[in-house]
Image (cartoon, rainbow, N blue to C red; front, side):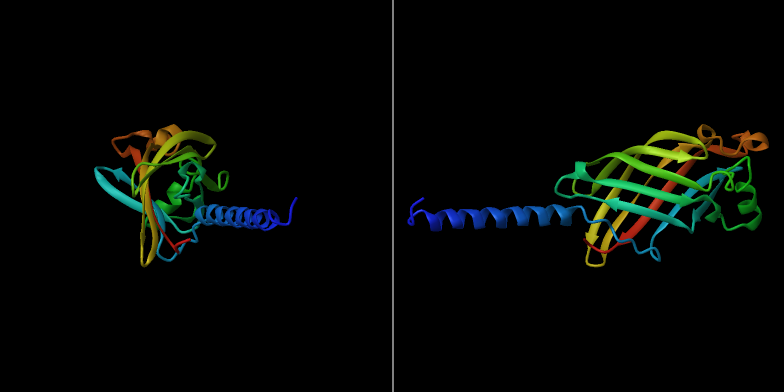
Length: 195
């Protein structure tokens, strides 16, 4: 190699290393997990009992959410809910839904959603396909949600509807859908810092 070509080769190598580092940093940045502000976030549900909407939530849960805005297919989500932390606003109802015919919290202490694929529909709309496990049953679900970045941080919210009978929730005397409807709406609102 001549002395004349050596500087240009060195410059090319330096440029290549710099570009590689920049791309690696961008990829790592795009896939940074959302640091959730649990004080402002919630995971809950809405059901219908005797024609009246009953809302509730869970106080103990964790979420590992990575949304890659550059390559959405690299995104993932995993949410784990501690079923014993259910709160319907009524002590008697809370005790009932923790029992064997409902969530059976001693036998099945967690409910888990885990994504298999994530896609971006438009600027704010996203969709995750995955599996939801409640009790000892897993079922494929589609979760539509929005993601919005503001000066206050990142906000993700959405939900999906399940049929409680599919997961054997609310059996026995509670199996009558005229008393408690089969459809249950799962919903979430998550706030976090921008990556």
